[in-house]
Every structure is written in structure tokens, then in C-alpha cells.
Image (cartoon, rainbow, N blue to C red; front, side, top):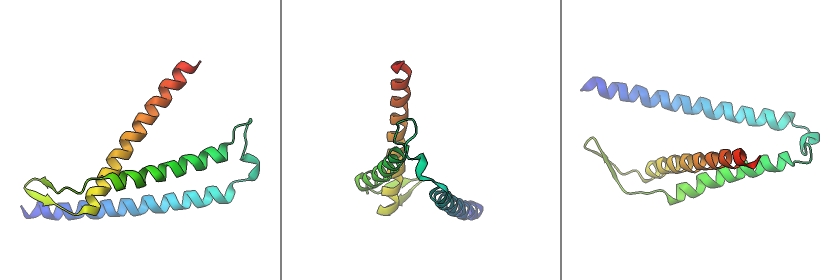
Length: 117
């Protein structure tokens, strides 16, 4: 029984490390993109790509915020242990709902583009 607890701690720390690495890489990528971006690329073939990119990014952040606010805080019982931390319950719901919304959006985009031609 004790080895399960040790392995759980190791897995938690590995997840924290993976999250930290992902956040650092994302931050560096955004910084590099913004630094190397030129104003000539704002409109390509009459399509305002910069405006579209910023709108998509803002919509994604708004989706995360809305799904976090709508997340449930009802305690969850798993393997006989009750989880009642409202922040993590809402965060879990946020990721689940956002993933579902983005998946449905991608499917709708594929269907629309398939029958557009």
C-alpha cells in the first residue's frame, strides 16, 4: 500500500514538471512569434490573418474563463476518497468542457469545409 502513495507523489511531481515546461515553452514561443512578426503579414491575399489569429486566441481564453466559471463544485467521491477542493473541481470541468467545445468546433469546421466546394 505504501508504494502506491510513493508512486502517486512521483506522478504528481512529474505532472507539475511537465506543466511548468509546457508553460515556459508556450511563453517563449509567443515571445518569439511577437518579436519576429512583421506588419507586412497582417493581411495576406485580402485575408486579415493577424485579426483572425488574435480573435481566435481571445475566444480560446474566453472559452476557458466561461467554462471555469460554469464548472461544478460538487464534491466528487473516487476510490472511497472525497475530493472537495472547489478550485480543482472547477479546473477539471474547465478542461473537459473546453475540450468538448473545441472538438465540436473542429468537426463543424471540417464538415463545412468539406461541403463548401
